[in-house]
Every structure is written in C-alpha cells, then in structure tokens.
Image 1 (cartoon, rainbow, N blue to C red):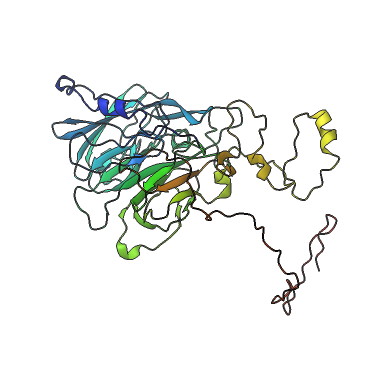
Image 2: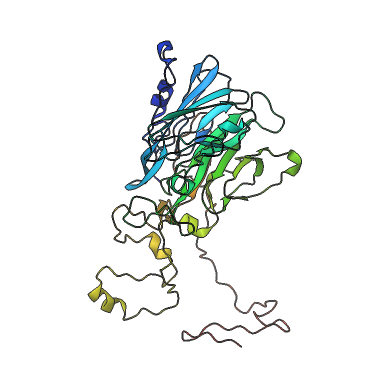
Length: 460
C-alpha cells in the first residue's frame, strides 16, 4: 500500500476558516479540495469545543462565526474524483469532491448553510436524520422550491441532537445520488453524554457504488443492480487510506450507506458494539458484541471498540464481489476445465488470451492484463506476503504501540513477533495408519459421496 500524507490540504482548509470582519456581510467563502488524501482532523478554531472526526480520504468543511451562527458554504458542482491512482470518474459532488466535505457542529449550534448550485440542473439538499423545521428538510417540490442552476439558497436550523448524519439531494435523486452527491454531517455532544463515550480515534466514511463501464469515466446513472465500482468515500482499494490507532485507544467508526444494497461491514481481530445510528445513540442495554454489522440502504451505523490487538487488520464489506474492481456477469466459470492444447491455438487468433479460472480466480491478483484506459483492475493491492487479491470496499485497521496521540500517518507494514506467522509445515508427515473416528460418508444412513472422475460427476 502506498504511503500517503494524511495532512495534505489541511493547511488551506484551516486558513479558509479565518475570515476578515469586512467579509462577514457577504457570502462566506466556499473552500475547495482537490486532494483525495485523508486530511488531518480540523480542530475547531472557535465555537464550542469538540474532538473532531477524521473523514477517510476526505476532509471537514471550515466555517465562519457570524453573530453566533456557524456559517458554511456548499457548492454543488461537477467534479472529477480520483478513485485510485490513474483511475478517474466524472461525478457530481460538493466543493471539489465526491463525497462532499464533512460538516461538523456541536449540539445546540445555530447553523446556516449556503448552497450554490453549479450543476446543469436544479437540486436541493436534504439533511438526512436531522430534527429541523419542515421547510428546511430539503425535499424539492414538497418542502421547498428547487434550487435552479446558478442560484444560491440558504438553510438555517439548530443542531438539536448529537449523532452521525448525512446530506444528499432530494431532487432528481436517481441521477444525482448515482453521480456521487452525498456527504457526512457530524453533530458532537455539547458536554458529557451518558451514551456517548470519549474516544481517541474517530473515523467516518460513506459507502458508494457506481457503474462505470471499462474505459469510460462517467457512471451509468440508470443502473439499479449491476454496479462494478464499490467504494469507501469514493475510493477503491488499495487507494483507500488505512485507519490507524495506538494500542489501547478507544476507536469509533461511523459508516453511512448511500448505495442501492446493504453492506455487512466486518472488522478482523476485534469485537465492537454498535453504539449509534442515524436515529441517535443506542441504549447500553441494547448493545451486544459483534464483528460484523449490516449497514442497510440509507442507514448510518456507529461502532466502537478498544484497539488492543496490534497488527494490520482487514476492514471490509463481507460481500465478496464488493471487494473486487470492475467485474462482469459474462465471465464463465472454468474451474475444472482442461485447457491443455487449447491455449496455444487460441493465442494464434487472440495473442493476449490467457487462461482464467483453471484454479479459481486467484491468478488475477498477480496478472498484468491489458485493460482499457481508465479501467480499475478487478483485483489489486499487495502486502508484505504477496498479492492481496482485493479491490473495492477493503482497507486495514493498523494498530501499533507507541503511536503519537495526533499521529494519523500510515505506519507501514506490521512487524510480526517471532513465530506468530502461519507457515509451511516441514515436520514429519501425518501417520496414515492412525485410526479415525469415521470415514467420510460412512455414517449410518448417510448418502455416499464420491469425487468426480474424468470430468463427470457421479451421484449415488
């Protein structure tokens, strides 16, 4: 995995929060972000204090204080998202990115959000999960007029309850959400809360999926089921930054789902509890230990755990095809097919032909197949022991001793203690004469099973 600077773009974002008095009567500045790296957490320069989140491969939107009101400026606009190095997607987003910047406020804050529409069609912003006046809910035609291209609307309400929320359009949703218009909203508690623990690491990201045909750059917005680019914050593995934690840290991960299917998010090496949803904190009596939580469409799940096991632990969607790059339903299953004598003949007609599926699809992880321009490989990424054979919704939680409290950088590969890595057995072979409890398929009344012979399956 490439090391990336977690602090890229942070300085310009903080600088944008400093606004002169003369500018307070005008529209607040709309900062923009072009980097796809994970920005450092934005320490609040004013207003109520809080511990900021880290948006995976994203950033937090600065604000200005105007007579006690936090003012933000979102710009809805076409963007080009670098989903992975050399792989770019034409999307619609906010302030230069898709997903848009995370908005962080504190419970009780009066918030004013200016929304400028630079899209070729009208839009709105729905503040998903918020308690607010009906006319601020952002449903075009129902609670407000649409925002025409070139116009700026303003939303204003109080952040009434702490939690993890989202924002997205409620206008031409099939197009606009399929094109990546979404962002995170975090409302921090204004003081100690009986159901919200203090954490040392607080991560947040959105799940998004796109249908980008090989060689293309623009998603097919009318797709409903057959997506091929599965992302954390519109990035695909191995271009998704790791989550890092110091051993013993309490870690919170906030995951929102704006795809068209559910995602069972699975963490290796640790157990967690779901401590919150977009409906608010979960009562302690309703929590239980888990290693996988299903995040359904339109849901937000907040999980917490103690990062007490050092290592590089996988964090991924447990739907296997969601940890792949561009795939297609037209690839035949060739497991068990004898290719001997065929490959050379086919290569005379198709020089680039290579065998797929003779041993499953593991070879794909190491192949360098010719691909159309701007096409992400199906499986990619390497680790210290070879190809990871992963893509899409996959990254790592890197737990280390002795990390600095504000150190968010990739610490590199884990150095395993001696004799703690699975390895080939080189001792004496198993004793074939040793008695076993029962032969396979020999239990009383059990059906008999035989291995296939000569390419044919025999059933008895």
